[in-house]
View 1: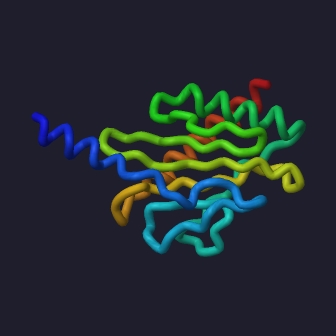
View 2: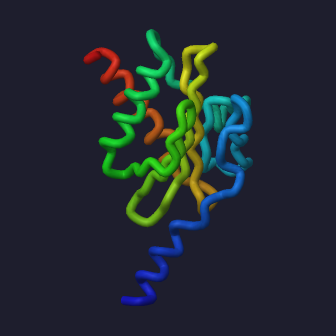
Length: 141
């Protein structure tokens, strides 16, 4: 049982040291297919940013609300225009980042697995699910 717990805990991996916004940019995705980013230029990693209308701070607050309601998500860092979250599956931890871009009226984001090469599309599916939840809160507001 101890060996099993150590194996599961080992799947979380170490938090990468390249996280955090540098100006209005998030870190680029590595070549592995286990990352998506709204700033990526290649189609394998590219995903559309979250688009909103109205007050940027209200939109970012809506995103925080969506993320805080998710059972697989923990907000780790919360700054006025930047959020860092940990996204958990049964065995693995992924890192997500969200950056408010008030000039483009978008929220740029990145989600990447800490371990492994392929995530079988999990980061993309999860980010699209967050997008749907975010858009649903806009229609209710």
